[in-house]
Image 1 (cartoon, rainbow, N blue to C red):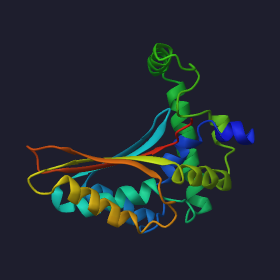
Image 2: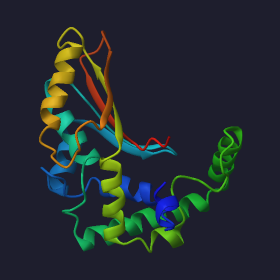
Image 3: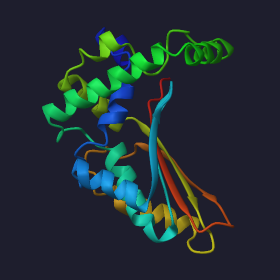
Image 4: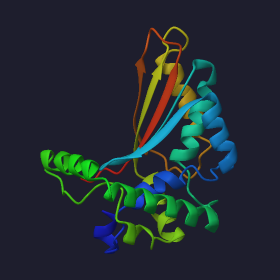
Length: 212
């Protein structure tokens, strides 16, 4: 949609944004964020053809931290990003794409997946290295702002014997209020999924752009 409106090729920019969102967030430096993510649970992010997903798994006693960490990455405006970190992470992403392009089995599997779903075979979510390496910090910040002011789908997995669904949603919404760069009404659905046998907590935020 951004390309359609502006005429600017941004193929692969979502994947770069996924990486950059872990850099100098609203409430954590890059170092603080990564240290917390690694110490108290497991984390990851992925870019699909429709959204960027950020998630964190931890035990129930760290549920507040889990929400904070995911919110700080998903709603990172990238305004605190410095030039050195930007260029460094862009190089990481370009090398990741080149590695993918040299993997014949990986290319075959992705092409087969795309064909089965009626998608463009050249669209691999990662982007084209020649395009990605020319992205500017300003362009990336513009696109991330576009995501932040789009719709979101929030998932929770929690232990229902320790906290109720309403308490989970209330906890999330109270912590979301700290992010004043999010326009009111952007959260389209928040839901919890009960895991009765495990003392665990998972939160996922999907940045989704819905095109009608």
